[in-house]
Every structure is written in C-alpha cells, then in structure tokens.
Amino acid sequence: MAKIGLAQPFLKWVGGKRQILEEIRKYVPKRFNIYYEPFVGGGAVLFDLQPQKAVINDVNCELINTYVVIRDAVDEVLRDLSKHQNEKEYFYTVRALDRTQMFKELTPVERASRLIFLNRTCYNGLFRVNSQGQFNVPFGDYKNPAIVNESVIRAVHQYLASNDVKILYGDFVDAVASATQGDFVYFDPPYDPLSDTASFTGYTLSGFSKTEQMRLRETMDCLTKRGCYVLLSNSATDFIKDLYSGYKMVIVEAARAINSNASKRGKIDELLVMNYGF
Ligand SMILES: C[S@@+](CC[C@H](N)C(=O)[O-])C[C@H]1O[C@@H](n2cnc3c(N)ncnc32)[C@H](O)[C@@H]1O
Image (cartoon, rainbow, N blue to C red; front, side):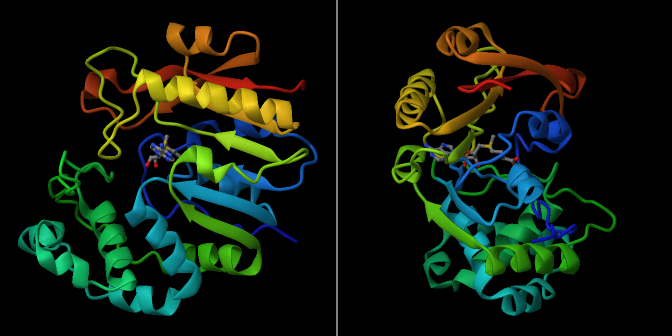
C-alpha cells in the first residue's frame, strides 16, 4: 500500500526522531513481519515506515488515548478541537482540569482534544507532568498555533484505521511479549541523561532510571534469542555504550530541540544499537 504522505507526528514530543529519520531508515531491516514500537511517543518512525502490521505502545495513558481516539473517532475529536482558544486564561483552565475530580468525567474524545490543545499552545510544545501526574507546562503565548491540524490528523486516522495497528498502553516489556522470529522492534526509550543534572526523564511519574535502562538491555537480549531484529536509539553516553557492548553500534548527529537551557540546544551525538548486520 502506498504511504500516506501527510501521516506524521501530530504532537511535538520530547525525543522526537524527525531529525534523524534519514539515518534510522538506513538501518531498518529490508524485510520483517510485524513492526513493534514500545516507546512510540510522537511516532515519527512509525509514520515514516507506515508498516501494515504494527504494535505500538507507550506508558503515557493520555497519549495512548489520543491515538485510539484518532483511529476510532476522528470526526468527534476534530469537532471538539475547534472549541479551543489560544488565550492564557482559557489555557490555564483547561490545564487545571487534571487537578480536579472533573477530569474523570471527561470523555476519551475530550481528553484527546485537551492533550492536543495543550501540546500545541504550551511553552515549547511538550508534554510534561509533575510528580502528581499533573500537566505543568506554562502557556506558550504563540501568535497563531495550528490547534486543529485537520489534514495531518485525518491522514494519521487513515493510516491507523486502514492497517493492522494494535495500540497498547503499558510497560515496554509487556508490549513485546508477542514478538517472534522475523519481527522488527524499534526501541526509543527516554534518553540516558548526558549529565546528572539533565532531566530528560520527566515524561511520566516514574521517570526512566539507569535500572530501567538495564531492564531494557535484558529485554533486547531476550528478543535477540527469539530471532527478532532489534534497533535501539539512545544518547551516546559511556553508560549506554558499555551497556550495549557486544551489539553493533553507530553514532549519528542529532539536533535536540528541547532543552530548557537554550545554550545547550544544538547537535549532539545519538547512538543506534542493533542486533543484526547491515
Ligand atoms: C524518547 S520518547 C519516544 C520518542 C518517539 N519515538 C518520537 O519519535 O517522538 C520515549 C517515550 O517512552 C515512554 N515511556 C517511558 N517509560 C516507559 C515504559 N516503561 N514503557 C513504555 N513507554 C515508556 C514515554 O512516555 C515517552 O513517550
């Protein structure tokens, strides 16, 4: 089936892979059965490959709800999105919903619409929650943010609805439980921080510690034994390079747009690790 050109990330997500898609493409196996992406985030690689059979997953339930709603109720979410206003007071009212009992009463469509609205209008366009799981990014004050990106959302719907794409919410280990020989797993976990003060791990309540990175390496070993192709990206830190010694590695340059310290934005090395030749 031909690729749907406009199907691309509809959210801005920390660690988005758009800048290194060309590099990643070079290392994707020529043939594989089912595509697994257990840390799907904004889905840049998923939409680039547009596999006909895929399993996507994330531990962020608001994000996963948004994918499900775009697949199953695209007209409703587009309609709901059009009600939002790019105004400071309105933004903070919508942001505060997850601090009240009312949040439980929102429909899945309203929750998806809220996430897209906040992502489009908040500062730097990202999804960050505090230790209580509450969205805490300030208002972005952008002139004309595209809150309703209808053509992209419809294209994403078309891709998700016309292919065999399972959308899961949970931990990465459970997401790959059904992967077997000939399947291709792409892992894009939260980055190992470049320094102890760097906090790229604020995606979820739990964060992603060195112990989690080690659990991921064990999962990669297990999938390797099962005969799956596994590709993984992470920061090129000494810890990650040591962790994956024994696997093939290539270093690519990535521009990381999201860094709270503007002077540190720019090109930094990213590591691709794989368990197959190329
Ligand atoms: C680097 S981002 C993925 C970026 C994505 N590939 C893109 O291109 O936008 C990492 C994702 O892992 C998710 N995550 C963190 N811990 C997880 C876990 N234990 N299991 C599954 N997903 C997890 C986060 O919610 C986040 O969306």
